[in-house]
Image 1: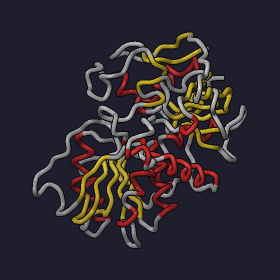
Image 2: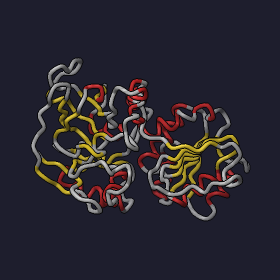
Image 3: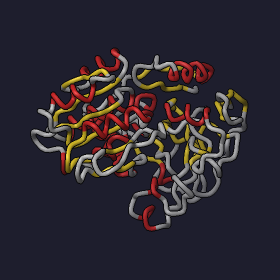
Length: 347
């Protein structure tokens, strides 16, 4: 079968022919209906492999951590699934036995060296005709959604959903959420805040078309990032700042902005993996403003994300590509030329 793989560090992916996997006991083979090309993959291309998170990865492996499709084959002992079932793939594969995994927090598996690996994250992902999933628990049902439309929910939907759920206590009537980065994840975040809370949303981005999209997806205000953006957000919040700030980008400039527009007793969550540095001392962070990172979400939260999409409250703006066009999809993603999400349809 065809697969788009990371074959060496500091290089783009490569289209290759690889064997179709055969599911062993407990495993499931999924025929991919849609696989997302995510901005995180660009960081994999740029890495030298010495990042502690990637030190245990073995090249080559197939990219693609946003995956949905249909059950193709099941291994011995698999119950509750049958060929043809539409499924979405939960992409962080924990051990299943530690305390966090048993609490449905497999993205924080205690046996992970730094962060939990999974489909397209150090292991073969979905930019191929078929994906071998190591356990049936990583497959969740799709009801009413086509896999090609559902694929972005596995990350672009789940990651901001988890971050927002961690801050629901602050998103009350009259509150404000600032979402820095209005691309694929940011657009999902806007919709999730609007679906779950009464809070006002201010979206921030450097691209005018993404700010327009943010407004279409429900943002109450859109601010162009730049020297005046912190003042504009402060003015929009009567000088108080925002209760919740989600930095979907995570580079130095956006982290600095996030700290400037958060308010005392608020929460600043770094979602983007830009690996920037947050300026921190007693006066650079608002008093008792908590700062945290998050990583994907839980399997139950992914079910909730799918339910929101089925209810028409969450959707991705998608541009589709064939597997042969995967390289072009990533090049356009690097240029910022993908308005929402890029999804590869392998077959």
